[in-house]
Image (cartoon, rainbow, N blue to C red):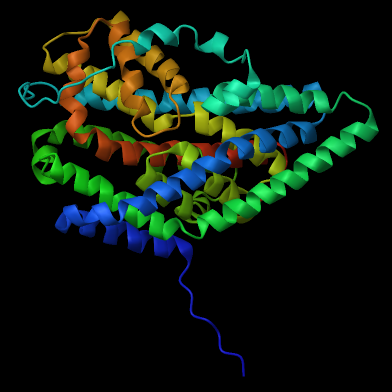
Length: 411
């Protein structure tokens, strides 16, 4: 008689280790020095596979799309969804911060020093130019995601323009390489629970060691924290599920259940890019979205579709204005909304990138960069939540676009 092995689904393992890591970091912050190494190794392993995964998946995905008309249609749908969903998130945050007014009467003495943020706005104007890499190997080495994505789309498109024999050879080689990368991805994913424990423990321990008693910080920035959280919850639990239901004609509850593993990973790592391998696996194998759609939409979304970041930037900038007693004009408020949209697109899928890109929005309306110090104490906590919404928005987009292309899904 064969005995069945007892196994806990990975999303439950991640949830358990997420909670355990939080308690460990809170009660034994000094002991995290002995566990940090595994979280570092886990993130390095994920980052190791991100660039080859993006390059191969987008190239093969675009090559499988076929002609320019199909690629143009798919690209238009994808970008249209990204812009509209991000704008919906920004407007949600904008309305909440205008109604709740969390910055009125805020404690201006409760600030953290901010360094090395003033120069970021200088390079933002050249973002579109820098999408085209002057050296693709340099872009690959430096992890310049927009440049890599541009080259991958271009390469994949022109694969379809060569003769049949070399085209079939290139596609077969790339598909084989992508299969290998996915095998490596599955191997790395097996260590996710242990990595999540280490990362969560480190984050909580860092807050304790910096003197940021979490309950005190949240209480002193309570209204701001609640405003951002409420906006993220509305967008994540109302707006995006409605889009999946109405636009995608799919079941948003089933989709959410299928996405538990990548969402918990996004929450703990605060990185859309690090979560990408898990998102692609879940969307393709759990939801049933084709590799063609998954390979095109998710790597692109992890780089430029930042719903949660855009909402947070809008709320944070208006909060800072309220705290300093600056009444923004209607024109300035419109600039905040539009600049938050552009800044979210320019944000890298790495921890706290949104905080850096906020300087773009602050400069656009003439607010002091020192205002970022007002919100820095709770930014790491909120970063975990907004990254989760970023990833969920990407996966919802993949489902909606797949259904619009006539695919039959599992949800």
